Length: 285
Length: 199
Ligand code: SF4
Ligand code: SF4
Image 1: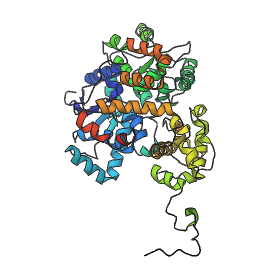
Image 2: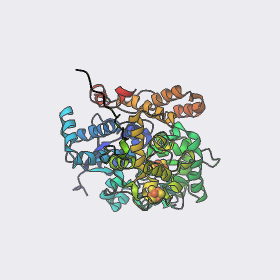
Image 3: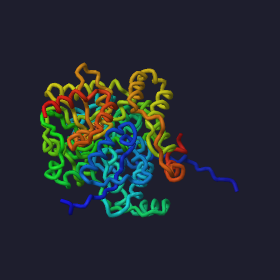
Image 4: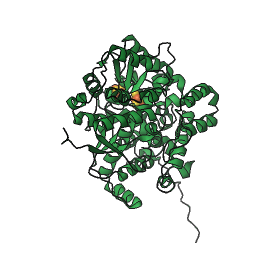
């Protein structure tokens, strides 16, 4: 196995993982380290632009995402974990492919080339390429007995403008069931978490989040697993149901299965305490 | 030389009946900018029925398409719907005619900002501007700063105070912003396009 060299990737954390969702980032790094994947943080990255830049000015939103592309060395794929960041980085790349004039103007402004054939992929794609068998071979804790709802939210499920790109429906189930967990698909897996409305108009979002959580509880799931840090936050803070179930970021569950041992430190940052679910797991093991 | 007055006053023909009217129809403009062919819409209402946030909207997404087709520029640019829309693409992926409604909403928001019309849901544009202020300053989103600035602006700080404190206690809203080294130069430069003129 030693002939498999650790693979290098450029890594774009994005604002959520760098700050409010630091626990997702830590667990992702742990998981990558255990698997021998080398995630190299993009030097001096900036926000992908998010929906705010997209809303207010097209040039701004393109420029913010494009600057990150200009920082990525050619020759290794750029990996993002946040579905929205991935979406904006890919959209910007498409724009620049179709608009060489803007691309040239930005390259001149920054004095750096922007490679338009840079591969931009989600971390789940990295795992798929790594191979489920190899992943399984690295597992140290069984997820047996963990009933999870794979919560994709909206953005990993095919924005039409990027229809030619790879999407990830089903990947979360493949990966986590390979590690022993049991997927509970009969819940609202693709219902949007409310995005920025959770900050601006919580009264709109609360009932919707309650429906999502309610559907998971009704399906007798132990938890929801999401690939997006904003989804994770919104589902936690806007759930006023009496029934509360923990919401994990995908990377936390992955790192847990791979044997990372600092999980207590990530879990205290959750608003809904996930420890009872984890204890149930370790008892079952 | 004095001007010769015409005996009969020239009849002013309104622009819109001229054959070479240079102004595009609203539908053509939105179709072009959004890159989606919205005239294929046959009002099946899948989009309106599927949108999770339709209850907070004043027009359903399919009604927005109709307003655009009818050329009701003022109504559509000042409506709430385009601001409530978070771009979740639920509608776009359900539309049987392959219309990317989220792209239409994106386009209409930009047009509303450019036209300087009264914004249908002002607290949402306030929030986006607060995010942009943070991005301009740090190059990254500093959530605590955004929340404080936003709540101050709209006077709704108290409403979420409890939650804000709980999040702080869990260190979800970090106190010290993470920032880009070259934020001053490269990032601030990007803001010249929209920000300076309108804010
Ligand atoms: S789903 Fe498509 S065709 Fe149906 S009403 Fe909406 S835009 Fe029109
Ligand atoms: S993209 Fe906008 S209009 Fe469409 S379903 Fe989502 S929130 Fe509703």
